[in-house]
Image (cartoon, rainbow, N blue to C red; front, side):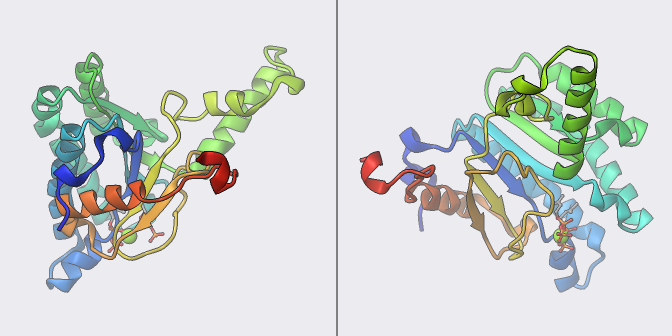
Length: 246
Ligand code: IPE
Ligand code: IPE
Ligand code: MG
């Protein structure tokens, strides 16, 4: 089994994004309620964040709650929001200890006010940290993000702040929630589903995709190591030929 020591530190992805999926099925398998899975998922978040920080990863982005997840049963949504508040409260110390800066993407003003306030507070209190940037995608949907970018850019065109001719990929990028993050290098999805579910559509244009069959609460350090080593053995060509790269 590969361990952290087998990872080539010189070839680390700069930005890993994870679709943390399978909490509900994990709980169901054990004859428990879905929320039991979410509670255990929080533990995996903590461990994964610490492992990534120890690896000196620069950017980790976690799909925590999608715009579509608002359509889940009220009890489940409320439990997820409560878990968010309690985890933020509990983890502030650990984030600071590990020099991690907390960031958020998504329509975060739509979160319940308690969660929103707690999130802003932890972001503020970790803003000076210079290690890994941990981004939580909360009430996040890539289509909503792109729609909002189109609206902002159109308004600037209307007000003569930018001209149509000048709209390029950089300008679009600057109007996304992720404007201060690099593109995703490695996208991991747990639970066996092989889909993107409205996550970072623009930012994963050239990401390496890695799907793993374990449910999120069972995702452990060695799964993370396997994903990174698998990534390191791929040739990223960005449209070029293999010969051009070597
Ligand atoms: C991921 O697990 C957590 C969230 C989407 C909030 P799920 O809750 O989607 O679990 P499954 O996919 O139903 O098993
Ligand atoms: C994606 O998982 C969202 C998060 C992990 C937060 P879902 O469980 O909501 O995705 P679908 O519905 O299976 O596509
Ligand atoms: Mg799911």
